[in-house]
Length: 234
Ligand SMILES: NC(=O)C1=CN([C@@H]2O[C@H](COP(=O)(O)OP(=O)(O)OC[C@H]3O[C@@H](n4cnc5c(N)ncnc54)[C@H](OP(=O)(O)O)[C@@H]3O)[C@@H](O)[C@H]2O)C=CC1
Ligand SMILES: O=C(O)C1=N[C@H](C(=O)O)C[C@H](O)C1
Image (tube, rainbow, N blue to C red):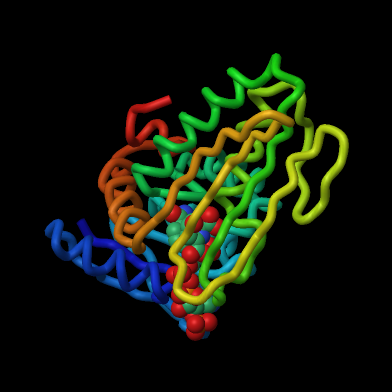
């Protein structure tokens, strides 16, 4: 498969290694100021760039008939526009806040726990995410997915906020610590006990492998998909 990497930073470089090991060819790497490139030479594009350019990168792929996997976080205000463009162009598109198999299992655990806790009003929920100090967005895309999944599965919570507490609010704390690839913790607390579930990424390999598997899966398909479609879970 011929792969274009849109964003050639920490994730782009990790994805390159894994893609080559799986027999793929990187035909294009795009970074800041690389404006003049032909995306059409790729069978599929993988975007791990920065929030301010992700939508443009995705649009460029969809306008040129190239399936696109996006892992960039912090651009979701434009997600509906990307979906509409994908439908209009009959293209193929996946966004996931987290491509690792472990986190996608963790997402399912989180939904199940949220349902189980729905009738137990004595528990408050809170969330913490920890990432490396170069991260541009807060809270992380994964924390937002976890919070939205709790809201969809538990009647006691209707919104999330960064560093704010309140009635029916899921407070999220974002910590930035040198070299941490990504840690997410969901905590339910009552007066008598605490229940915690946690995912700790030890490196970026899991995110990168999931993105390459998603790219292999999407080629030849049309539509807007999620990692649940790719991994056949949920
Ligand atoms: N969904 C998931 O599983 C995961 C998502 N992420 C997300 O992926 C994104 C990238 O993460 P990471 O690789 O760690 O970040 P990096 O900062 O290491 O890499 C981002 C790269 O994007 C480049 N870039 C800047 N402008 C453009 C442009 N116009 N087009 C293409 N690339 C551009 C940057 O170049 P320059 O440095 O020159 O500005 C940089 O090399 C983040 O949003 C992060 O949250 C990360 C891990 C997992
Ligand atoms: O920026 C990162 O590094 C990561 N970003 C994603 C997020 O915002 O959830 C996924 C992962 O936690 C690493």
